Length: 211
Image (tube, rainbow, N blue to C red; front, side, top):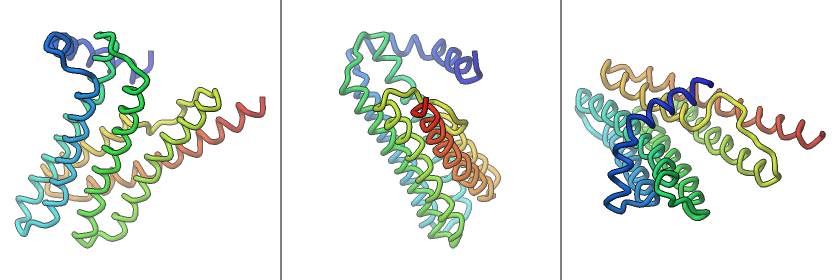
């Protein structure tokens, strides 16, 4: 069992009672997925507001809270799939809805961070954040394209859960310390590793197709 499976098992044990409650009151996985998107929009708005405010202390608070909201929204990303399985509510449309809103959520939050860096005169870090957005989309796209060709493609070390955690945690630390270099470092890490992962997956597919 790898570290992701181990952590997932622990989180499932924590959220299972909540999932059972959702099933009883009729909450569907698509509703949970949509709530996750809305929370990520709120987080992005916090980053943009942090760039607009004239109070440095308030800006740091907003950045920290934005990271917290991203982390909280990540739980909804786990709960929708778990709810679908436990409540026998899995559907092809639900899987598509989940994947689509995941992409929207990630691009919206990273877009908010990118705008914050632009407004704060961190031009090159905003460029790096844009590169992180590209890498994030391409990691998911290559996997989807590969699976359409019948190839399992889960290689790499900067998949969505890791990207969400890096973004959230570095934003929280930046907010707590008042040092934006933490969040900037998180964007650099995602930009580098996500794009490496995307090309790693392309190479994996090339090898599989040659067999």
